[in-house]
Length: 274
Ligand SMILES: [Zn+2]
Image 1 (cartoon, helix red, strand yellow):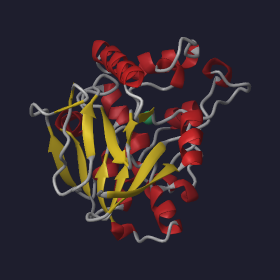
Image 2 (cartoon, helix red, strand yellow; image 1 turned 30 degrees about the vertical axis):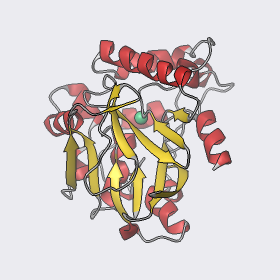
Image 3 (cartoon, rainbow, N blue to C red; image 1 turned 135 degrees about the horizontal axis):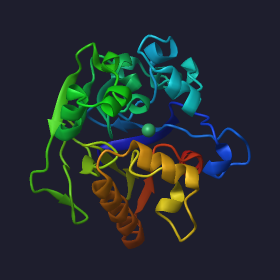
């Protein structure tokens, strides 16, 4: 077994406007940035998604005023991955690898706090974030997050599959069951990240969806989340196909825990169990 333990971290609380439209009971909603810190036997710590980083908290990465007004990020040092890594008794240098669902600002901010770590992601996401070809991509991707020049490890589908879906199941230099499951649409190269922990698989679906009702049961997704999903998607048909594939996964397999980045209840359930 190569994965020793998995910690669930919230690396960015956000209190978006229109909480009532997000299924909440106040004007401000509450979202988390669910990240994983994976202890491996051979390859140190692997961080999956990174929330906001130190330089975001200090106002040095160019997070726009409109983003802050809309999403109400707490921007707290204590929530950064680096501070939580230290609180667990590790050194920042122990984080050898970062696997990222996509490079949106609320997922990539912490990369700069681990400048020695390799950053693994889908090739299409890397290309989209480096090119920033349109206004929406210039707003969502902040080059300050990778100004230190990380060691990128990029991947494309190579015929490999996981549970019948195209997947990258071997990451270079990582001898654990950690892989990338392309779930494009929210961004051009957005992907889920899979991790085997004990007998179960964790499926970090990133921003493929925003509210648990997108996956489970028949209850409605609050209108505000649907509106937000549409407003932020780059390839609508691909995003819908990704959600359908995730629903299918959840309905078919009993040995996996599927969650998205921002659902507070999914986070509480898994963090409480771990
Ligand atoms: Zn996000």
